[in-house]
Amino acid sequence: MKMIKKFGLLVLASGAFIACSTDDDGTTGGGTTEARSELYVSNNTDGRITVYDVADPQSVSVSSFGTFSTDGEGVFYNAADDEITQVSRSGLRLNAYTNILGTAAGLDLVFDANSEAVLESPRDLAVSGDIYVVSDNADVDDDPNTADGRFFIFQKQGGGFALRNVVETDFAVWGIQFVGNTLYAVVDKTSDVAIFANFVSSNTVNAQITPTKRITIEGINRTHGIAESNGTMILTDIGDASSDTDGGFHIISDFASKFNDVANGGTLLVANNQVRVAGAATLLGNPIAAEYDAENNIVFIAERANGGGRVLAFTDADAGGNVTPTINNTLSGASSLYLYKQ
Image (cartoon, rainbow, N blue to C red; front, top):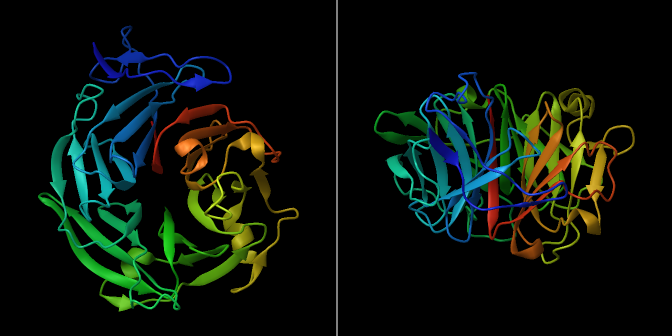
């Protein structure tokens, strides 16, 4: 038997987190296949990756692993290779680590591959097949009065990540999410969302690109995090970046249809379209990243400011309002999330 998650305790509204174990082949001691549902969390404070086993929301365990980074952002788990890829802000590159299930909690992850140190101010990571896209919010033209950003497009190869090309945008970037072949991107410092249709195949050389479409999301002050599952989009609102109490997130079901119904440059109204979760009980100040478990209707949030950093989860928050999180775990510098389900 190998313990894949057995480090620390968390506080839940319903009780304490309890660790569980599986065999090397992902089965329980009785030989039945066990569902996997894991939340991978990167952070800005020390670069560690924290893994929450959330297969059973009433019995959740947590592990923490060391990396080469002291400041980490976007994160992705590849189950086929049992590999985690992390965007390193301290190293300005992609780093991949392997043998996750075989690494005991508390130890450093086993290094596997990386990219050249070509990034400047990397934030989120979105993956489509062997293509790894990093949003980078460095000021491209060194003029703070103009809005711009970049996407670094890497291709995963046997020996690491090769930089395929870099594309520049006319807006500041942060959270990104692939939905099929379309890349959704939040427009930082605004309440807008942009899309790039057929992003990987349409942007193969260094160039300045314009989004296929861009709309405003009513009710959001400044969006950062974005997540999509089964047609529902989650968008976070950090509000005033200097406040640790004015954040929130929006739940938008049937998002693609609603997005398509709004004209380019138009606004998606709150009424009959969106649900907003915000208020003192939510502990949301600067919700910087999100993930969504559509099967269990759970929204996961990386909260960067409130309490120094938290990982929060909200179950059945469809009614919106001042909702108390089901999971509230203090995690200094929580910055990015990736939810893996099997």
